[in-house]
Image 1 (cartoon, one colour):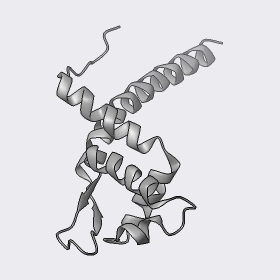
Image 2 (cartoon, rainbow, N blue to C red):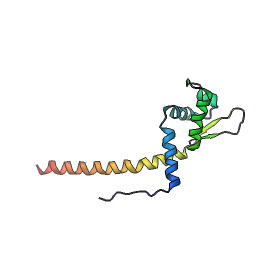
Image 3 (cartoon, helix red, strand yellow):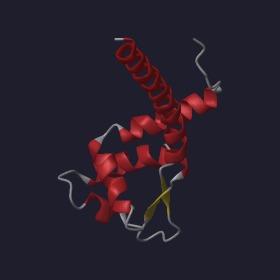
Length: 119
């Protein structure tokens, strides 16, 4: 059984690693959730967490490095906004596995129906 594979270059793999690494942390996911409503300052993003400002900044740096968050132009507020392009990359990567499992489940369902009809 041949499986469709997507060839990726090292740059793509590094991007996926950065994206999934950023999404692996619940604090960073919560920050992204807060950004869904619109731009937020660093202090607004850090408000719900019991963390120091340097720790909040480190989380934001990880999100920025992954391309999930971008800095606004207002130097005083340093607003951040969500960037959805990396999420689309992650979704495309996951989608190929969803398709694979759906195909496998469809084959299993077909096999089980055949077994039932043979009885």
